[in-house]
Image (cartoon, rainbow, N blue to C red):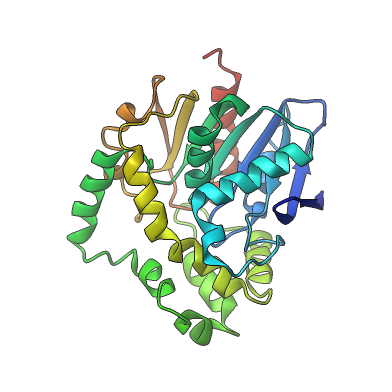
Length: 286
């Protein structure tokens, strides 16, 4: 069920699945998707009360034009505020793509509110060794799978070029490797991207990256204290395996990785396998 909630930080849309008396689990999506990317995953998480918010600037949440609102720590504060407004103090937490960066920030900001953490298809923001190795590897191909990040950092040009072509833009990126992206999900991502100002607000996830990088550089000696698990689409061409090099040193607790057969959009490609990995980790006694 989709709802909206007004908090001190803005107006946010979110979906819920399951019984409210179950343990709460927040799942955070990435770019260029919406909370709908968790729809099929959430159907399998029957032991939890699943809440999937739309990030600021995406889905049906408010379109804030100020780029400073899109640093990943600020987006994390949005999620904390949603939880507080829903009277949820502690919760399980997972994120995919930029959503993974957001939940990592949350784990570093307020670890006492997070019971366990799932990270999917994203670099680990306090893992300097992994980032360095991945950049070295990606540079060999001139960052050919990263071009869209540079493109969205060009002032005003994406807005001029993509307006009226949002469906082409979304269909170009949202392709499965093992399984196709469900038609319903694709239609939802396109609909949300066609909401006025979304080309700008989605690009702000990338336009805010210089400030993210500065902040992350101070995290290199800081470890994530929340028990965590990584799920990774083995065929992801952007978040390549090198990003996960030396990953154990970024966490206080032992960290394992579940590799699934699929690309970057693993929630859409392999929802049952993603849900299985989430259930196994969150149900363990760590």
